[in-house]
Image (cartoon, rainbow over all chains, first blue to last red; front, side, top):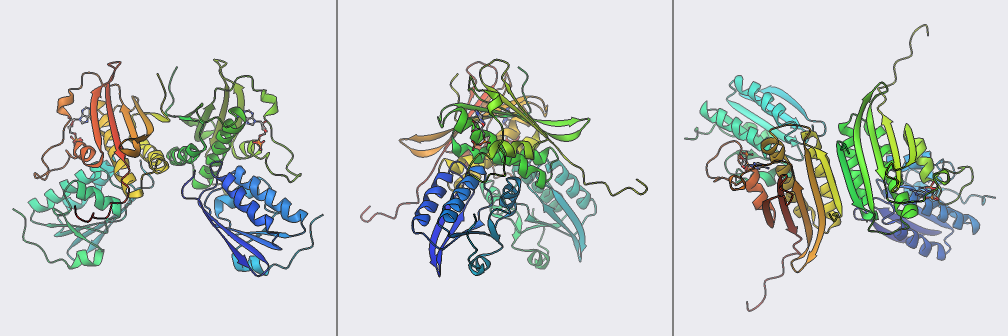
Length: 120
Length: 120
Length: 151
Length: 151
Ligand SMILES: Nc1ncnc2c1ncn2[C@@H]1O[C@H](COP(=O)(O)OP(=O)(O)O)[C@@H](O)[C@H]1O
Ligand SMILES: Nc1ncnc2c1ncn2[C@@H]1O[C@H](COP(=O)(O)OP(=O)(O)O)[C@@H](O)[C@H]1O
């Protein structure tokens, strides 16, 4: 496992906020998937995944987030990512996913984004 | 060389202040020695060596500081260390030098210490 | 066999990914790469190791991963060379390739990241035929020269 | 020869000290040591490497230093084992010892630091007689038990 991976899930007005902490790689991305699956099962209208505490993520972590996006989109729900640190932003750009996800600078902004019409 | 070693030397009221930065090990302790020798040559009454920017030091760095202390003491001058970070404090304790050196929490304190009678 | 400047050999366990990253980050800086060049190199090696563990070894945790690292200093400038070797025989190297990213789906990013982040990427079979060899190279880019007048 | 969990082999250059430290710090945490236990272990290995470079190799920069690392999990608890090997023949092991610290003088601290920071320190000649072998071990100390009543 990478150093001290942590997570908290809390309820917000119209959904859930998950905050991850620690480096995310193939040693702990299965844990990340598990936490997100539990959240998706509660069918939140808005799922915010905050990455303030995540200095590093590899493609195994990105894959879990893409899976989450697909799950929410299929259910016509919203997924928003917030607080991407430099290296995490970097892998989203390399994978050309920086325009596929809704990404905000902080959690407050993520709460304000109006529910978007579902992607087709 | 360890990551980004730096140093600045500036004149103070009754002597010199050297600030080091970066990890100090056998890759750059010779540079440290050189900088300190140059300072000792100016025979400062008070030599303050500030280690705020030094997160790590091994015994090759400590040896240079002991040499500096001996040089100042021989000349009946003063050497004061300031701002030891946890790991640096650690090696001074392991080497039982934490009571041999005058060590202060910050540069201001180091400037206030009255000139001590020279060690015998 | 001549040895490299710095070598790591570890068991195929995901918990060693972060150890390799830490060493590589420090080493790449020693070889003159800037932080914004170091980050992609570290990511590339993480992806290459993860692929060896997942695809090469099917998550077996007791297989060897060998990483050999050398400084580069040649006509192309200063840089770092990283060679990863595993003990996976019978791998069809033509199947190791990135996919079209337009299609958004989980996975299938690792190989794309290798080619995107490194200057050269070379998959071959090891000379001793015991497994796959991946050679990665990255050169330091001195700060972009100012636009030249009259050019 | 059976391989260790994690091995590093590098040329005897001081610039690789920080690379070894970075890997070892991450690894020692993986093996369950707390930060205040990791720091002394990292220092010890730095001192041992520096001694190999300075005393063993007289500052030659193209000689090998091999570091093999394994997790410990035995009767004494969880911990880390670090074995350093060099290619210095004819070293008189009885001369590798710490000095009296009461005398304040530059140098002569490295071996003292080894014994002070590690749980076991063992200098031997390598089985293949090609050099010196130093085995270091450090165990994780679970938080000190509360003072027991009646003891
Ligand atoms: N080290 C490897 N050994 C064997 N096959 C590999 C290796 N790396 C990649 N591959 C093959 O290349 C494909 C693409 O890899 P990648 O782009 O990392 O995506 P993913 O790992 O998500 O499938 C893998 O599905 C696998 O078939
Ligand atoms: N790896 C080594 N190979 C050969 N001799 C060594 C080695 N390590 C230590 N020694 C010997 O032990 C002595 C004490 O070492 P140390 O406590 O580190 O102090 P210093 O390095 O300042 O002399 C050295 O002077 C040297 O003679």
